[in-house]
Image (cartoon, rainbow, N blue to C red; front, side):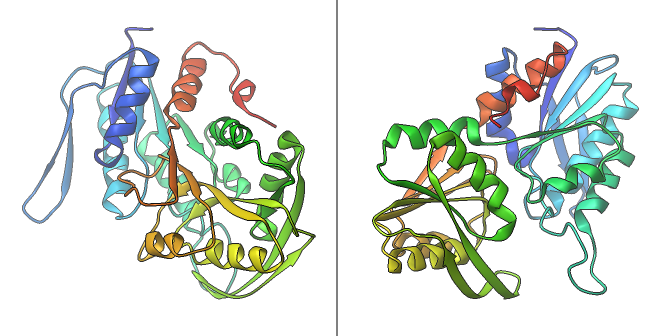
Length: 310
């Protein structure tokens, strides 16, 4: 452990950051957030960072204040003469806005990449981006981790017979194929058509799931509409059981109630999104060891790709 490495936790990701720092073998540096009476954020770095390798851990989950806090913290440590500023974003918010899928909309994920770079980030580390091509939006190194390191061992421990991996849409085929390869399972695709964001118009299963134990794999569970509808259709097509693995548990609105009342046996997620409310059918896996190991490899100039399951 180098004495010139310091970890800072954003407000929303403090619990995960404490775990990552502890697994690395250190503790969080002194840092606080103050606010003006109108809500304006001011980060205060309470110890020297001159010449240090800094790791700032913060998911950019809603509200937007979390992103603003991260940007201001990056700026603060840059102005305090940090050697490198490594930004660890377990959940990269705004990743679903990665292209112009209709006229006159923002490509928000590109804008966020520009903002992080302009603020002074030297490197970004994140997990399971909604679209892999977002990596190309950055002009600084980006380490794109995936959650297979925790999901695959868990699924293997279930010892499910006739296992089939399901991609909930065309965009998730690559992820589903990766799981199917390592679990030596079959794969099916759900053809999904949306009328608008968070609202699915129709679905159709491509492939045979009769008598199979099906696992849906996805990156984000927001309203859970897609997963619950997909699970219902898979059950109608004869699936013996349906469960889902999604990295980022946003679970907005009535998602928890929707999942509880669905035909899914369980929803398995990681703790990249903070303050997950536990409910029946929810299983949370700790992703801190993966980030701690990746950070250690960066500090010691070792391979990050060696951590990937591909």
